[in-house]
Amino acid sequence: MTRTTRQPPPLPARTPLPLDGIVLDVVVPVHNEERDLEACVRRLHAHLTATLPFAFRITIADNASTDRTPDISAALDDAVAEVTAVRLERKGRGRALRTVWSLSEAPVLAYMDVDLSTDLNALFPLVAPLISGHSDLAIGSRLAGGSRVVRGPKREFVSRAYNLILRTGLAARFSDAQCGFKAVRKDVADRLLPLVEDTGWFFDTELLVLAERAGLRIHEVPVDWVDDPHSSVHIVRTAAEDLRGVWRVGRALATGRLPLDRLARPFGDDPRDRTVPGVPRGLARQVLGFCAVGVLSTLAYLALYSLLRTGAGAGPQVANAVALLLTALGNTAANRRFTFGVHGRERAVRHQAQGLVVFGIGLALTSGSLAALGLAAGRAAHTTELSVLVVANLAATALRFLLLRAWVFPQNTSGSTR
Image (cartoon, rainbow, N blue to C red; front, side, top):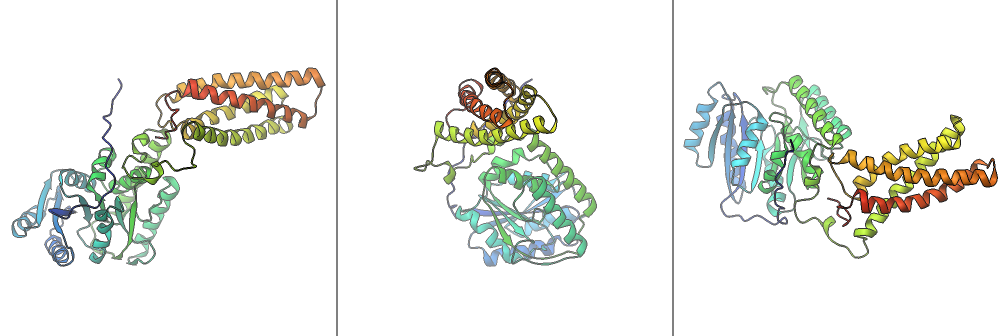
């Protein structure tokens, strides 16, 4: 059974947001926070009233609390005009954020932990780039230069170790995934939320990874942060859940399950999408990409051939066939991704099969060249063999490009890399 996914329409270019109506919706996800909830919400409300030059709302997202949190939330909803309470019957910070952000009509969405460990003076710098249209997401960072953090060594180690895992395992470039102080434009959230699977603590990390893969601008704000000694977060359990999330997303990226073709700069005004004089497009761009892949493949082929001939003692025909086969697989995969802009797993096996047919043609050219050399010169020197193979591979490469462009990837010959 084939599942079809509706492609969302492209978003307009980034523009400053109008300041009429509610501009910012600050979500405070809570679970059994009866002790701190009212004081923290009133403190947050007083700060926003005093510092923001536009309308805002505070949304308390209660996810399955079993203490007096729902009653306190409802009382705050009644008492403070800018406060709204939402009740969810299932637990999960990610689930709470997804629900409220999906329903909110505010153009900028933010969230912060109820303990207000992050200094509230960082809130306006957090959301200002989103309102102006400069950035798409913003995060508070306890690891950025200029931040001032007070916390125990165990939490410090866990935080830095986790971010190191993200950088090495998922190639993440943002500095602090776990700080409960983030914001996103509503149009961006509507595009990314359907792709985020996690409903717990890994939710915002997954959102950030997808945003980076989409080429979005993530603004980082150094924050002052003081650890809450009464925090209800279970460090070991949360770390285990996060590691499972890293493994799931990493595996999805490696196997092509994530729809990266839908995330490749679909968000409007990106200078990399513009035609620049002197920058080759279409056929010329593909030729350059193919040549770059070809050079690397040829170097790998020659290294493998020499290794098999001089190190393993294989004959010239066997060494040529094995080296060409291995590099052909890598060459097809690289050209598929970088030269012709094909992403994901769809038709990957078919493309490799077609690539092997092209490989067979290249093998016939190079093997025929070796056979002709043997007839003409008998036992030729190794350097002579390499010279003949280079010439034969150049001819095979030109034919390979024509076959890849006209037969293997006929729908991706416009120069698009989406």
